[in-house]
Picture 1 (cartoon, rainbow, N blue to C red):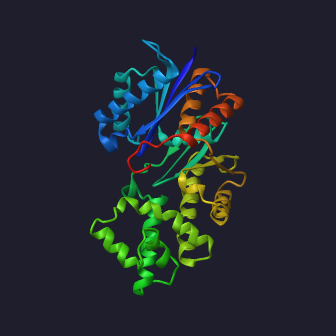
Picture 2: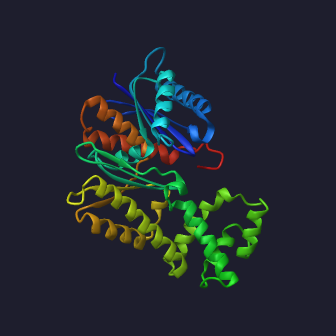
Length: 339
């Protein structure tokens, strides 16, 4: 039986799945991050080994039997040195007969499109973008944070929301409902109370991304300061997608632009409309797609593409996406902070 081992290794969690050639989901497990940037190379591979073993056991795979191809879409597969180090560690792990290493953005792209090409913008805690042309050419951002010019995602939206609240209250900015709703999210009365709680360590700065829905909520209610933050994020999404479209010379084509990551779950229609208008100003026939399947489904489909020597049948893709979307909805996130 042909088997594909699919791994989506993000900065907060790792998903591992096993599928067969017909797109049948045999097993799926979720665990903590295996990113070498977060926990180190040895610890990351040790965690991944445990998750792979758990998936194989759940699928009833015993002994020396292994998947025909393992697809590892990993956060931190950024630079040539990252790729070399990860490739060596994966080979030593012996998880599959053939290994295919990709940055995690490419899993999100394949999860959202049946074409096997297009553009993806990730907007979770941070941001990233990548693209694949019909002829296989690829483009990707470095996505290393401030040192690579990045802005966006829940973390930056949260910081901007807090800043707007503080500046409004102390007279440096326009009045905004964020003065009330931002500290209110943490059960506090004033922006300064939240600032002091963070300063003294009573509330971790790592939680700042939790304020993103608060900012979006204020924007949908007509708050100008919140809308300005959301508009800035929309424009940054357009800038990233536009960069990929131009670099891959797709401006006259009809690329699907896949939107992946938790921020895009917002019901804010004005946010989506601004992105759509901006993207179509770059490529008139471009179409936005909100991915409903977890990225590990994209990793699985990349493996099926590799096994079959061509883009997997859309019916198989639909089966993989549906099965893993259902699993994802029920899965218990094993990360300490909820991922």
